[in-house]
Amino acid sequence: MTATNSQASTEKSAEALSLRTPLPRDGAALHRLVENCPPLDPNSLYCNLLQCSHFADTAVAAECNGELVGFISGFIPPNKPDTLFVWQVAVDASMRGRGLGGKMLNELIERSGAHYMETTVTPDNAASWGMFRSFARSRDAECKDCGPLFERDEHFDGKHDSEHLARLGPFRKSE
Ligand SMILES: CC(C)(COP(=O)(O)OP(=O)(O)OC[C@H]1O[C@@H](n2cnc3c(N)ncnc32)[C@H](O)[C@@H]1OP(=O)(O)O)[C@@H](O)C(=O)NCCC(=O)NCCS
Image 1 (cartoon, rainbow, N blue to C red):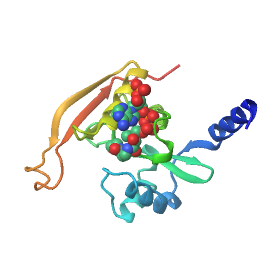
Image 2: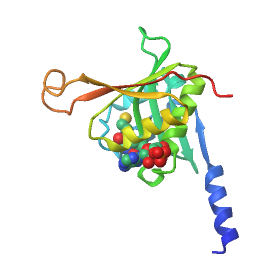
Image 3: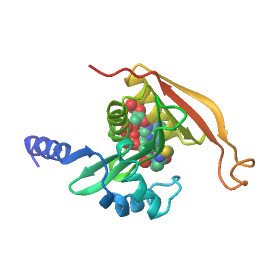
């Protein structure tokens, strides 16, 4: 392949990637994507369908050549209307390390207009901390580890690592 061809092919794959609001028809593909993205906990397909319908406004789907390659599920907690809670971030292994996670976070914070973002992360998930910290930096915001929100023994019956609350912000609309 010549340099020009290779550049054209990179541009083509960049063009083929699109971010959009999820639709109910994404539910089954989301279920498979999460199953293939450990350490994420798979949810029921019914839960994924709700994420793609009732909670679609606070979720984003990334599609490449007709395949679902990334997804963020989230919601606005009823007692924190200025905060977007990120439930799960999944990027297909073939698409990692290219900034897709950060792009989806940016799309959601812009679309929701939220001033803060919260999520929970296990202390050993370096990729997740790396992504949230990098995103906060890119928006000139802070990313604070607020300590355990749900604990291994007290909340997870000893079956899951403790989840730390991460709080990011404040975010201002980008110009
Ligand atoms: C976490 C995950 C979503 C990151 O997606 P991604 O598209 O590869 O992330 P990005 O390319 O946007 O990376 C953004 C930053 O994170 C850093 N990062 C990514 N993977 C990393 C890793 N394994 N270790 C350390 N840092 C990492 C990158 O270096 C980058 O930082 P930089 O901008 O300073 O260079 C992806 O690895 C994934 O789906 N993992 C499995 C599921 C999961 O753990 N989800 C998060 C918990 S909700």
